[in-house]
Length: 439
Image (tube, rainbow, N blue to C red):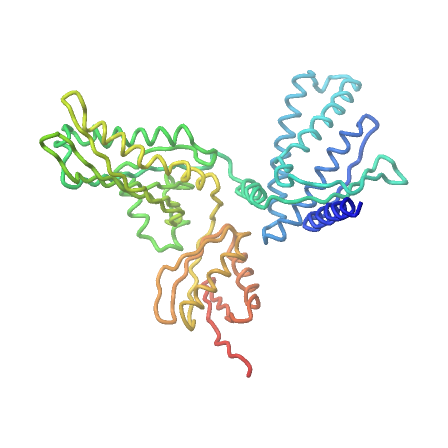
């Protein structure tokens, strides 16, 4: 009996411990006489999810107002589609009878609420929940209420947040450009039976291009190889000062990305008696935002060493082409995932950092800005660095007033980090103060 009581106590304690980590939420819904119990419950749970998600977005330092505005705007678009489809289905026009119109409104309400409860798949963000209480108003029984506690999947919430905050439609996105370079060592294309280098390079690059076209994410409209003329335009554009790029970008590069791929092939040995070749392959890739020249991610291709014992019927060029294709393709899913999760950047600002004591103080400041700037999708890089003077380029989604507010808010964020914000005609600077400890 004592053992049973002990396990019962342990189960209760673990349950209470789990619930203690849950986020509390609440919601309300105005029902009609036609709504069944499960339908009402579904609507209330969805409202409870929204309440929980709102609290968690705030905890992450993200922008609730922007998220829910984007979310509701897209939900309204969904409602419009539903309404038009239902009007067509029920043949509703201005001349329809009041009875038909009333029936249409009832059906439309139902369809909208069903769509609302599924929209955004909020149940993926709150996969575990407990309904603590469901009630109705004592004055009006149609007013229903819920209290709920749920466990939030932060990774799913972050994906959901940025999928709506991006706020750009597919047609507004630009192109993913591929720029490929091949390096040959200790052999030429003629040595492997290729007269025209494009017969090798062009075929491999086209197969890579086909992969990205086939697996293209919704935030990319086109995929193409960067032509020599566009490369020349890009070189001219990249010579501009960083903070001038957003306002001077050529139209063909708006919202576009560049994937630089470089592959090196080396003939490491050849055994004439057995006609066996050995080749080494390696390479790397860089994914770049063309609007900002910001490197989003770098990738290294694992070095591969392959040997081929050839006969007259075999094509050495085909072996090499297949291996080069596979070498880079292994990283393509990772590259595609980065592209899918991209957050928008609408502004670039140079911030001059001065009077810092050492590089650690500088790194501490940058880490703080990055962590607190998530709601602006903020990224930063050091453009130049010197003794007590550096230029920091900040990329973010918002206005300069948003960045100023963020920096002002950081002035009291850490006790061991003190600085002054210098603002002169939107030329921003950070002057670090010497922090002395009291004895």
